[in-house]
Length: 415
Ligand code: SF4
Ligand code: SF4
Image 1 (cartoon, helix red, strand yellow):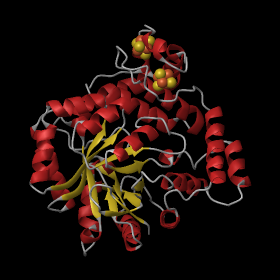
Image 2 (cartoon, helix red, strand yellow):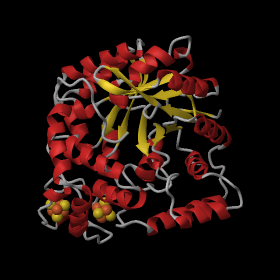
Image 3 (cartoon, rainbow, N blue to C red):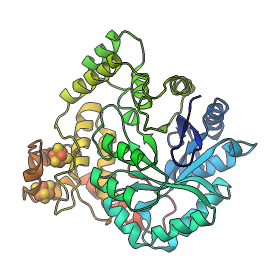
Image 4 (tube, helix red, strand yellow):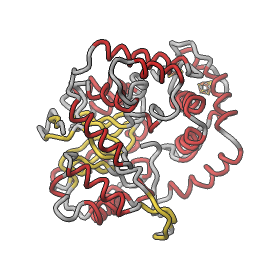
């Protein structure tokens, strides 16, 4: 396994981290749930990865409907495995409405994981408005406190906002690391490469999530993309190309993968072990450029995710919706529709729906778009393709349940 030093903590992290969010499941009954983590299978997979050099496990309060942390605490971390890994988990910022909730949730997490401290603790899924809400609730003082108590060793945040918001959040606290979405397609989306370089220049570790775009870059690929990979001088799977390209970045400390298959784990470990920073040739980079171009030709709307068009007076997350529309037409309908409903109809920072159909057609956004995208027309497409009365009614029912303090399970927007 290749280990990369976190710039400011000097800890050696395995280049590959294990995301404990898509583990094998089985039918059963516990805590009102009928689909449970298959503890035996999952434990074997994770321990196999640890035995082969992976030393970073990434979980979160809502993963597997709240059972990922307790699964790790009960099944993976005993027998000396706790000492072999850094544990990362996250504060579900999208569900916090009262200052007391920080402690309540954090103590619950320690209990579930059966640990006294967390190695890498993240504010989950920040964007500008969630960060504003967190600050208002005293998160800076709370983070200072748990750090001083030694209950958290390193503090970071995962991010799903716009580039300028990323920079602002990086600048407003003494973070040790960031976790951002990055892959061969999303080079300018959200934090993007500019954000990665900025965080690195400030001495922060950079953890990459969604390296395969939630599997979309290795599933149903456009024919032209398949051909490029097929004709490449070196034979590699699409996953290997995509991962190698990320590892090539010297700014990246670790890449997370949510693995649930032994062959994927083996391949990912091999690629993580082999691919050093700046190790890809120019020709190899050219292959990725061609793949990106072919994917972009398939895009329904040529949005770059730059975010100049927001804020919208109706709080519509335009870049996120247009990305969802592309995913819907390129990678399949169900998952983009589900994420669209969750992110824009349920898990919004003000707990109100902001669907594409709320667009008043004022046109303010279009004046600011450097790509001259007809945003109003595209949002009508989003509304037609991805919003329906049934989904909206479902979101309306889910909102109070997901956002009440009495809930027992919480769900993250996308990671
Ligand atoms: S046209 Fe629609 S999306 Fe654009 S700013 Fe106005 S309300 Fe927001
Ligand atoms: S719609 Fe235009 S301004 Fe908005 S994120 Fe996309 S490219 Fe940028």
